[in-house]
Image (cartoon, rainbow, N blue to C red; front, side):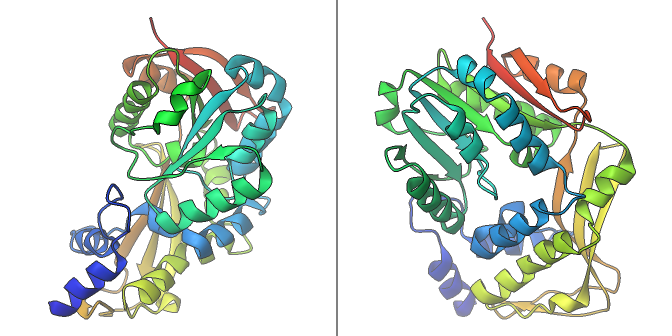
Amino acid sequence: MRQVAEVARRFEPAPPHATRPMIALVFEGLSEEDKQLPVHLLYGIEGSRLFEHVCEQPEYYPARAEAGLLRAHADGIARRIGPRAAVVEYGPGAPRTGIPLLEALDTPHAYVPVDADAVHLAAVARELRARFETLRVTPLCQEFRQFVALPPALARARRRVAFLPGTTFADFRPLEAVALLNSVRETLGLGGGLLVGIDLVKEPAVLERAYDDGAGAMAAFNRQVLVRLNRELDATFDPAAFRHRAVWNPEQQRIEMGLVSLRAQSPTVAGISVALAAGEEIHTRHDYKHTLDGFAQLARIAGWAAVERWIDAEHLYCLQYLEAAE
């Protein structure tokens, strides 16, 4: 057990407000009857690079649809948000989801990316500082499912606006989504606004192709989480011994992703064995999809009122701008 403690200390994120150590989250998830890994472990530097490749695949529409809406309706979005706004992005993904929004805005005051993965967050901050030399970029390394304490400097912004990319919002179960939306409203305070991406319910075949593309880009992205565990937690997973799986669950209205063990095996994490039967799955990600009425109900419960929405021509995706209800 001494080895486990040493690994935990070694990889505990430096900021005192950051999330729990990676090893604790991994052990907790792999000890469940239905084994799972935290979704944020899919990212980091290598994961983000591979996800950029996913976004280039013709089957994967979400990132393309969101960026397209941000660019096509840049003027309308900028008018809604107004000049000198501070933008708080929850769970910035890859490619950098905040770039089209920041490009659309009139002299944004600050950009605050919030994420639990310190390595990924640092990469996002570096890229945004290089792209927008005069923009104040203040990353916050913390779990954003709880209240986010914003930097005091944001008080000088004309208004505070949160951006929830669809790839982030899709991670949340309906009750969790309400809690998150409510937390965002409390974080922003009076006069805050919220721009949120909503991946709409559509034909199962379209959804499953998006998460299991012909080039195998999503499969490579999914398997690399095992490579990350090998590198950072002294694990011994063989990525080739797992099959990528992505299926639509109509009852839950979500895509479920996982890694299926191709044989009985017992890889180790920090010297601790993890028994896997042939065909047993480690869940890595679930992406919820929404109807317009369903999302409207979640937003109302959380105290938000829809002000404007933009939908792409194929009715795949929706951007909505919300303000706190009176």
